[in-house]
Length: 93
Image (cartoon, rainbow, N blue to C red):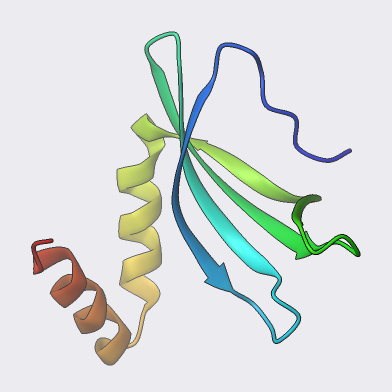
């Protein structure tokens, strides 16, 4: 089944990363509910109506687990990608 947001959840879309020339994206969102924070990473596709729709593919990760996950991923990155991430984190808006 596709993703269904619960009534007590507040969703903040952090970014959409374009996957292909059809307009499909990977959406990264911050979900807050009852003092709980998680991050949702989900594939979305462009429906015939032209609107983005959720697929069944995605994952929700608890904020408490994010540091370990990010560290694990960053350890596996090549030097150029790692440095681009560090540079991006260092930039102020």
